[in-house]
Length: 376
Image 1 (cartoon, rainbow, N blue to C red):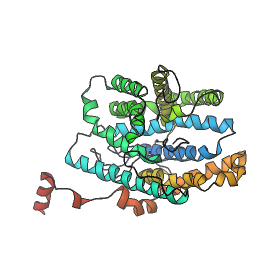
Image 2 (spheres, rainbow, N blue to C red; image 1 turned 180 degrees about the vertical axis):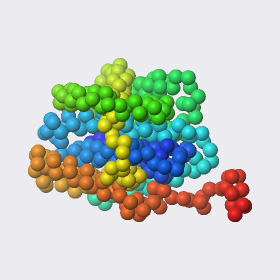
Image 3 (cartoon, rainbow, N blue to C red; image 1 turned 135 degrees about the vertical axis):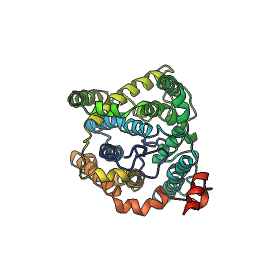
Image 4 (spheres, helix red, strand yellow; image 1 turned 90 degrees about the horizontal axis):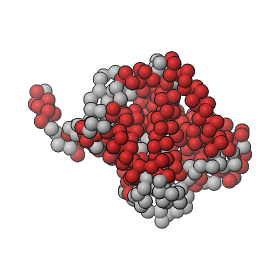
């Protein structure tokens, strides 16, 4: 669910069963799914949300540390692409049926509106900024992923009809990088530039994930991560982080126009390779954190309040030791522990009225539902 130092550059969760998106939990039942859960995807969701939370927590404390900035860049290259690829994979069965559209509203639109308001109110209070405006068309911080997933999923039937959907999606993403001024409205810049990962997920099959988990792929993933870490360490002081957020065009970054399409394709390739390396090392068996994969929507949406507190309350300025090695380790462990707690069943139950509302009062019953009721 998927944040830049500026207010308009939000990160993101964001967020498993066969029909469930990567960052969300049972609230996004927009496509058909079997009765059981796949431990592999639950593990992937949990590990990815930990990376998201840790990377967000590094933002306020990484200045002055080249190593932390390099790790931040490395994680940002693949954590949201991984979420989005799996989200696309579990959106393959979306056809726009009435029950699927209802789940889009209750599982994505409602949480988006609620947390858009919640983050705005929190900023007004904690940051002493009472004039900060409400805006449902300018996603605040983490909420961008919810509205992006809503748009992507609605477009699923179209992508499923195209003969070569991925090249088309890449072309659209490249053109998006050349279009200034669309970043604020529903975060369309991100929607377009991350689109190829979602479309790729729509094209995947179960055997592709089995191939990723083969022993030789795992072994290749180790030097790949090592080489990527060395490269990002070298690039850390040379490359602007705004490229990784995909929230601004090349022109708005002061770069030549051709650099937009080039960076779009390059980041897609790098993100895909590191996503494969990440998924290769996700355990397929049940672990102590497998059950937490069902609550990643809560961890995604709630950890942002903790991260924003570091900024709003000036905790880093008041505690300079947080930017030192010991402080960076403490921030990392605290972020990982906090998001883990936020994914637990008690938190999920408390937030179910927001993240998994039934809202039967808001929708008409379709013919199938009416027939089922009449048989009782």
